[in-house]
Every structure is written in structure tokens, then in C-alpha cells.
Image 1: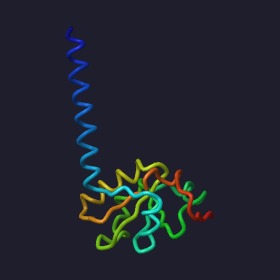
Image 2: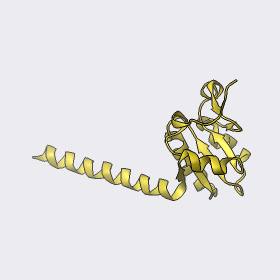
Image 3: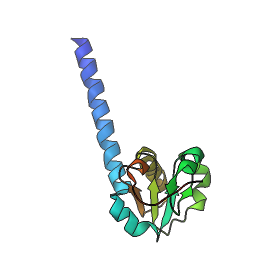
Length: 126
């Protein structure tokens, strides 16, 4: 019986953690469809959060590569007064990046829903 109670308590904490994180994420970043993303990214800072090898294999035309692993050291390269359009391979890194930037005072944060893997627009390869 004690094992069931312990499992139930752990489950409650996991569910609470997931709910709190999803609420924080909704406040930090706006998810955009590809069409919405295309309408605004040319007038904003377009940041690809993938690693350099992923970026070189193909990226959205006009994107700057600031890997998630370097974001804290390079965030000063991103202007807080302009909209920031983020994307990664599948939206996980861009969501975490949005939370990080939101804490630093960035307010106009957008991410590509589904990430680069869903992108069908123009791509540049190195």
C-alpha cells in the first residue's frame, strides 16, 4: 500500500511540473504556423538554435545561428527591442530559449510550430 501512495505522490508532482512549465511557456513565447512565421520573420531577428552542423545542412534563408548551447554567452547579439523569431529542429530548444530570453527582458518572442522539420519554405545550405 505504501508503494501505491508513493507512486501517486510522484505522479502528482510530475503532472504539476508539466502543467506549470506549459503555462510558463505559453506566457513566454507565441507559437506560429509556417504561414504566420513567414509573414513576420523578415522584419525580425531570425535565430536558428540548432548546432552548427545542423545549420550548415540547411536553414531558413536569413537566419543567424546561435546554438542553444551558446545562448547565454551570446544573448547580447539579440536585440531586446525587436521581435525575435526562434526555431530549432522540433520546437524543444526554441521553447527553452524563449524561457531564457523572457527572464532577461525579451518580450516579443515567437517560435516556429513544429520546428525546422516541418518547414517547407526556402532553405539555404552551406
